[in-house]
Amino acid sequence: MELAMMSRCVARKASSKVSSVRHYSIVHDVPRVAASLSQNPPPAPTPGRSVFDQAVNASIPRNTWTKEEITEIHQRPLMELAFAAGTVHRRFHKPSAVQLCTLMNIKTGGCTEDCSYCAQSSRYKTNLQATKLSTVDSVIEAAKVAKANGSNRFCMGAAWRDMRGRTRGMKNIVEMVKGVRALGMEACVTLGMLDKQQARELKEAGLTAYNHNVDTSREHYPNVITTRSYDERLQTLENVREAGIHVCSGGILGLGETPATDHVGLIYTLATLPEHPESFPVNKLVPIKGTPMFGQDAVKLEDMVRCIATARLVMPKTIIRIAAGRVSMPESEQMLCFMAGANAIFTGEKMLTTDCNGWEQDKDMFERWGLTPMQTEASKLVEVPEEPKFESTSFAHFKEKDNGAEKGVEA
Ligand code: SF4
Image 1 (cartoon, rainbow, N blue to C red):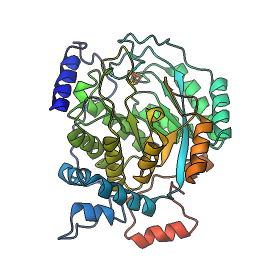
Image 2: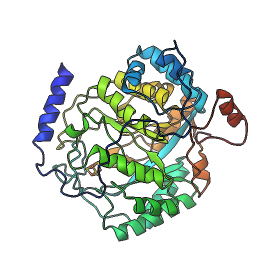
Image 3: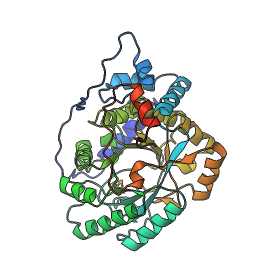
Image 4: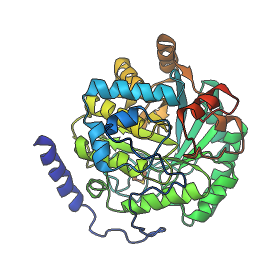
């Protein structure tokens, strides 16, 4: 009841926002159906076995999920769900390995979009000082510090709607990507919407991954953002994928959504893409005074764990990142998330404009719990390895891979 009222309240806020919806666009809406586009369709479900049991025993990922199936998994008793997710996690990933990533804001504020949670939108009074694009040298210096502190992925975020007309900016970002890759780190950028040509340019620079979150379910999305559509987001993901760059896409919990339907909807969107995202960040809303989302109820731990565990069962190979908002989670809560399938964090001084758990704090936590920084294939190579395909046919195939030289991204 309370959540339903909250949703209506958010919807009213959203509808009273900017009346001119989307003056311009660089990508076109392409209605999509949730369907398997994999060339290697998953094996037929075993008759008589529940969806949950099939997910727990899966040996390969599949992208033919229905919302009903994901709901069935999401609604399992939480202890059972978390334990099952941990079991699947151990089958597909090294359980103690957690990837350390550092996210630097390379251009702050002044964004034209109306994302109702964001301090960087020029539509809200958040006292954030807008800046120009950082210099290439300063970014590379920051990446070196991140690497020295154990991060193997360096992410760079610019508060832009899209890359249209940003020739000079793109040139500098290409240099930043090359510089980060030359350090032997994975490079990820988030620059707003991207067209096919821009994606190819970034791929040529050696970009490992592109972050573009869908934020929430398709149904709840209009209550959060009105200046670009859900399908425009998916089009950018398609452009990135086509260019051969890994996709990093996830959501933000705590936007006034209903977890039982909207967290399922968020996972459904990404789990039914032709390939699962290589990375699924789970953000916990950091309420920023001055934004429409300020004042939302804090995300409950059980909703966070349920979302992570469901994503782990439905997208078993994907790296699941605890992203924004981790700073508000006690260590015990973070551990529950790791046990339920999360295997990456953002660490460093800042995460975009919000506070982040510091290097030392995370090093101590890793030590206490026997966690180790994940080393990935992509961080060792300037060439980004091909995204893992849904080509395995049995669990034995994974065991072979684990025992041999041919390690997956989680090696
Ligand atoms: S989330 Fe990104 S696109 Fe949206 S307002 Fe903030 S910086 Fe702009």
